[in-house]
Length: 471
Image (cartoon, rainbow, N blue to C red; front, side, top):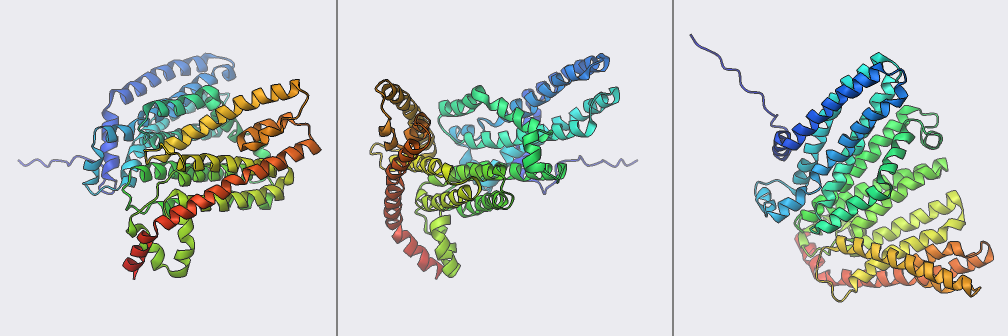
């Protein structure tokens, strides 16, 4: 008598081996099992309380708070040290020897947590249906909010994957904890309230398009945010020969011009805010890249002829080309800002851009800089500049008011000019103050122009070799 053995069902071969590896390890951990078990025990109690309560509005917050805590905090925090452990244990090189690219490694780390969060979100649906049977809730609204919690959670997970590339553990903890203490959960709550029908969001985004427009904006913006964070993480651990800068900068430019054009067509500041968010992340990514001296990176630009040579100064890796990219983006944003809100806000836009270029120029001319990792230097430098400018501005305003004088000396540095502009009386004095501040701030883009031209000339032999390779 022969017995036919049924083959065991396993993951499909089409899935990335990194995703399968991380997902298997993640599902076997005690943290995932204890989180799932503890959450369902609490959910059973909450469902019983909600079913017997005559007022569901007073008890629904417990399920929402528990789902938000698990999907937006506990699950994303599992990747807060993902790549740092690989670098610390020197296992990153072993993974690369298996012909896995850095992008697939980073994507596997994130996809594992995203799929585990999806499993938890799907397990919450019976409780939502049970609350709908008991009465008092809108089923479609609750399902949309559950999907939004999962979407926000995987975006936070992608951000934590990018932060895990920082070797300084104290810097990672500071970046994670400080936004949570100073209103990170409030921002997430505002997103939930906006998508669930807030008046500002409804008037500026949904309009006559209804929920379809809101869902499309949420999915597209979340997709870009995930790509931006994962591409930043991949480029930070990749070898210099990996051509990642061109792809991610092209995607960022597309994501930048879409809300910018929407802002010009609709005349709504919401779209302009989205363009500023994309421009801010693109600036952070472009200005913290080290100069690439591998000729093979520049070969594709020479192969594309005139168009490739024209875009070389914008899309090649390195902070020198990143400055020209940020300058172009800043000019586009400034023009759109004047067209939508008027010229009164333009000085503040110029001062913010000059502050970023001031920090970048300070890092490049820093004589004691030994590290090639510019991202922690930029973050610490920007935070230090803002802290010192706030202290200096506060003391200067107090001294100037006691002497009955206007603190015009605050216009020397862009961050102090931004903070001190409110202490100047509106009208002619404030316009004069902002004009002086813009003249002083013009030093920093000029200095960055000089530094970028010198850095671009320094790698000219590399480009000449790439030109010969392309020929």
